[in-house]
Image: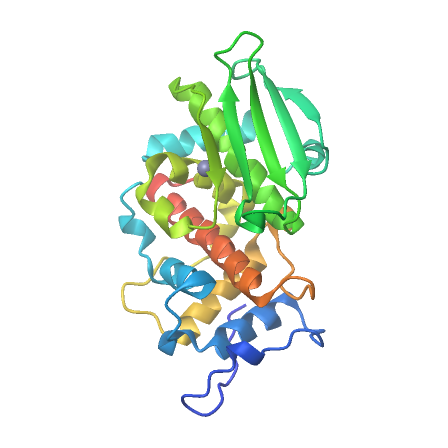
Length: 281
Ligand SMILES: [Zn+2]
């Protein structure tokens, strides 16, 4: 399962600008390997945008993330996922495609969850993955969830899980409010945000099996090289549950967004691995 990175060109030649995926018939793994190899990430001079975000995720030591959920919180989430919120069940696919979908989760508070899935490309466009707004304190209140279907299906699945994390967190810890919370691509910033990392943990726990993750090596201590990174990304993409998998060879997805999706996938993978290490589930 481990992959070696594609050979790079001459030193100093940066090929990421001209990577052409249009003729790519190779597997997801091959594509990812090429992204890592061709982007020449260790020497990258790109300091902003998607590449910087990916690098932040790659470099972060998740074991020392300030906002890492406590083991009992992780076990609580696993319990929820194995009882009332199985995000792998076919029922949840309805959430991702309906413009107006109403559902209740009596195990929590019985309020209505109003799900709106629609493509949003104006304004901030795809920078908005989705958002939720908790209006349960109002008479006839409900929990509103918006999912931006302009994203790839695997990204929408992750957004459902993340926004549902908001709902569960607010139901469980009674921090119901009227605030609107959105999900943007700054996953590295979530490492020091307890609430956001709680939501992301729901994504990670849904996207990766405990049994599968037990075969994955723990995070290394030393500074990783390109080969280690490549192997890590390959594992992250190979082991993810199919509903959360993103096809990086899709022609209509820009290279920038592919790198962003890679960052999101790697974030879930690294988070899932450390949750297994700390909570044993
Ligand atoms: Zn959020």
